[in-house]
Image (cartoon, rainbow, N blue to C red; front, side, top):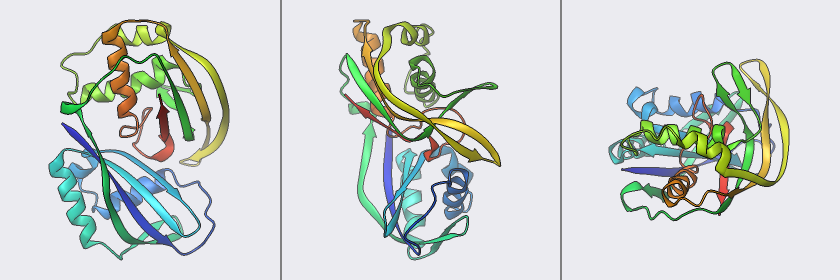
Length: 236
C-alpha cells in the first residue's frame, strides 16, 4: 500500500493574504475534481503554504489508481483559475518530485525520542470535547486510528492508547494557542513545538510509534476534515 504526496503550484494576484482559509481550502480543492466522491475518500490530507509570488497546495492521496486519476484531471486543468474566498490563483504546474510512503517497504526502528512541530493551529475532537494540548494518547492515537482504518494493521491493539499515555512523556515544549474562525465560530488551536521521550523499551510498541511518526506528513493529525488545519512536522 502506498500514499502519494503531490505539490500544486499556483500564481497569486496579491502579495499579502490572510491565513484564514481552512474550510475554504477544502471546498476549493475538491471543486477542482468536480466533487468526485472516490477522489475525496482517498485524499488523506490537504495542506497549504504561500510566499510573495506563489501559493502551494499539498495533497496526500491513497492508492496509485486514484493518484493517476488526480494527476490526469489536474493536467487538464492547468492554467485554470482556482478561487479561495475572494482570492484568485492560477494553476501553474504540478511538481512531479512527489513523495511516496510505501508501507510494504518501510523500515521501522525503535523510537526513543522525537519532536512534533505544529505549523498551523492544531486541535483534536473527542465527541464534544476539543483538546488543544498535544498529549500523545490523543494526537498520536488519532493517526493510529487512521492507519487502522486504512488496513495498515490487521487488528487493533487495544492497549496501545493506554501505553501512549504512560510511555510517551513531553520533555520540553514551546507552545501557544492561536484563535481561529471555523464556520463562523472561534476556536483555539496549538502552534509551536513539543519534544517527547519514550520511556517504555518495548520494540513492538516503539516500531508502531515509528510507523505513526513516519505517517504524520501524509495523514493529518486530529479529527474532522482533512485540511491544513492539522499541519505538523516530525523530527527524530
